[in-house]
Amino acid sequence: MGFFSNLFGRNPAKKYERDKKIAASGNTEKKRKLAGRTSTNPEILFYLADNSDVEIRRQVAKNDSTPVQASKILAADQDEDVRLNLAERLVRLLPELSSDCHGQLYAFTVKCLHALAEDEVFRIRHSLATSLKDHQFAPPEVLKALAMDTERRVSEPILKYCSKLSDADLLEIISHHPAGWVRSVIVSRENLSAELADRIVDDLSAEDGEKFLRESKTRIGESTMQRIVEKSEEFINWQEPVALRPELNFNLARQLSGFAGAAVLKVLTRRTDFDPETRAEIAEMVERRSLFAASPTPHETLEQKVNRYAAAGALNATTLSDALAWQEDGFVKLGLSRISGVHQLIVDKIFASQSPKSITALCWYAGLPMRLAVELQKTLGRIPAQSLIYARAGVDYPLNETDMIWQLEFFGIQVETTESMKNLQNQK
Image (tube, rainbow, N blue to C red; front, side, top):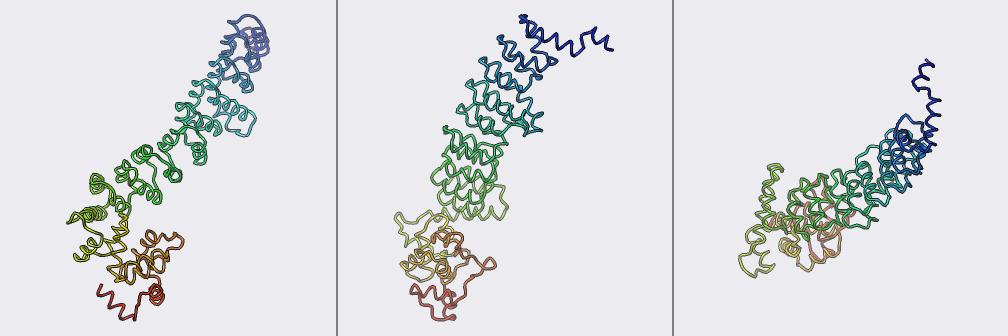
């Protein structure tokens, strides 16, 4: 067998010596072929990595048999095709090397890729970005370098498609990237997390926010959706996509209806993804909003409006809840005054006190449900979430009668007896 191996040139030792002679010779054509063969000994390929002939170096850079250690020489090569070939080959090596992510070869490869990710030539950085944007073994530090690139065609593929960038990475990029379009690209990510959406929604421009609301499949949390609805009063172009978002519940829809135009209200009533009961509630709410906004006289005062509702028997918890959602604070306070018989100045003092017990007692005195008391604490009372008083068993007032009477008497509201209190509430 040894005889035949020697005869056909397959003896490794002899082949190595023959290749060494070619590498050291002046025959450029043979050296080019030698640099391109995967059967060439890695030691010889390393030797050829800084050859004066550029085509030899290009062949070495893309040869899968070239040792990783030669990458440092090739990454600094003056020829951009050499560096491009090297970038493509190192990306191909990542799956093999990542099994030993703490090994020297992997670290060496990542270091060279990082250098190439900051290469002055656009097409090298662009090639890396398009190769690594959805690469399972892409090194995070290389991805971050590409994501921070000021050339949009380089950073956008990473920012938009790369799932390996964490929320912390993306927030860091938003904070430090000099270009204004970065936030727009990030919010267009298909896999944008709800947590990240919550962190950046307050800083979205009118255009970016509209795009996000129309296109993103991210499930938006309730508190984030609340802020989006509030901001849509300023950014009118958000209102229609907000009205179509699946996260929009009835309470937020009611708030949106307080300032949205007729076209958006129609969108709300035409939604088919709500259950029949919610659709009926929204249709009824939109009709109430239209009636609330209408006025039988050109210059109807707030007091006249409250009196009109009272005369129609419509000054009730539903009307006050609607007015509260529609930010008709003056109507709510005057309505409370009218229902309870408490002077408006005292009503104002109770809300100014920011006392959850006093606000709750006022609603109890007015014969209104506890759920409205909670809404009033949050909105007009501006009570912090941790200090809110909630209903007992979901509907009942949690304070005892003695405590609520004391709260009322503190503001000069005289409540004589339990029996007289019952009679008063029956009259209301």
